[in-house]
Length: 323
Image: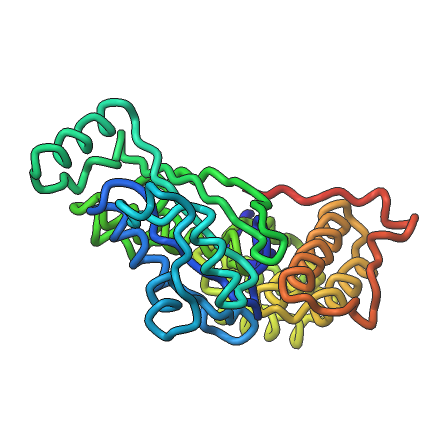
């Protein structure tokens, strides 16, 4: 029985937590690029453990910590948008660690339409950068101190997956550009900071042992994401029926949902002592893998209990089924 669970994952390309990041204006049709830029600023992580200093070129100029050094004669006539070299120089003046630049990718028809609108002075079409319900953006991250790009990453955001991943955006389904730019603004931070990833894990379905029916009832709560309620019921089952190893196994997964990995590993080891099944061994590996990701995401030292999966006895384990 698969249940949804949210787990922490490391930054996909480079962590900027605790560092200084300059966000350049996004290149592309202004109606969409402006929305995307605003969405990124609004979605900036501010919770403990994910904070960073975020600046824009305009903020750097306005507070006097940097002055524009135009890179070419062309920029003297057309300083907006700034070139990579100019943005990099401005970021160095502000003593930033990273510079992030983004460019919206348009298909041929959308690009020609945008160019035509710009030439005739027509109002920009907010759908100009949206093709088949998708928004595509190429992100380039610069190491400011080294003065060079470290990675290019293409991000494709579509309507259906955005609503699935961010259910609160369903109300924006009638305004596709706003929905896609809001989702993209959030997804940018998964590239640069620890982020929550939703997955599924197989919980145990017991039969025969005392407490099996109550355990399965708690499983139904976990299956719809109601982990606190399921946890309370599994704990009651285990209190009444200490031999109910399925409840012990499922409580180990619930501890992962609460980021209590030491408790999760303690509980899965107890379940394994009661029933040494392949399912439970897979779960033990899954728990430690999630713990490794969490510790990597937040730069934590090796836990006092160490990493069991690196031992020879654990080589038979394999990752459990995820969807």
